[in-house]
Structure formats: structure tokens, C-alpha cells
Image 1 (spheres, rainbow, N blue to C red):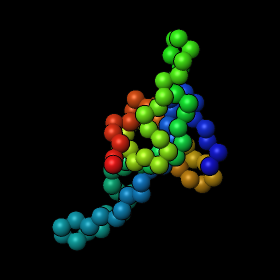
Image 2 (image 1 turned 180 degrees about the horizontal axis):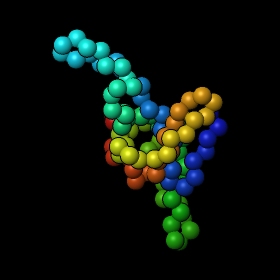
Image 3 (image 1 turned 180 degrees about the vertical axis):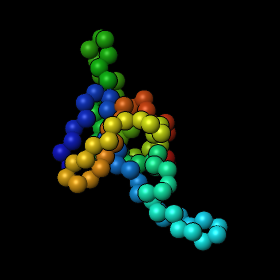
Image 4 (image 1 turned 90 degrees about the vertical axis):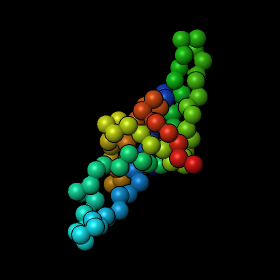
Amino acid sequence: MNIKPLGDRVVIKDIEAQEETTDSGIVLPDSAQEKPQEGEVVAVGAGKKLDSGERMDVEVSEGDRVVYGKYAGTEIEVDGEEYLVVSEKDILAIIE
């Protein structure tokens, strides 16, 4: 992948939604389910530039599993893969 996010931006790849079966046996395909809010960080920017000229490091790193806001970020497609570019402030938690 050749995406380099700027500033405090983070590139996330959604974790694939699994088909789900209801109690009555109806299979719900991933297209009928809510969009996942969990993903893996694949690229991180250099950090936010402060007024003093210093950079504030981003708290997440590549490979982290994160939870992000429901309507956060911008969806992009690179080499047939879909990614989400979000600001660090839109990331709610790191899953350990």
C-alpha cells in the first residue's frame, strides 16, 4: 500500500463483517448489517503540528485494532482495497 497520511490522520482497514444467522435461522449477509466500527491501523501520519512547531505523536501505531466513530472519516479505495482515513480524534479506543 502506498498511502502516507498527513498530520494526525490514520488509515484504517475495516475488519470484515461475518455473515450472521438470526435465532429463527435467517442468514443476514454482510451487506444487510451495520457498517463495522472496528478496524486495523495500516498507516499513521507524523502527528499534529503544534503552534510551537513541535509535533505531537499519534497514540496509535500500525497493527493496532481500534474502534472509531460511526460516521468518522473518508472512505477511499486503493489497489482494489477499501480503507478509511480518519483523524486521530475520531478513534475512540484501542482493542488489546
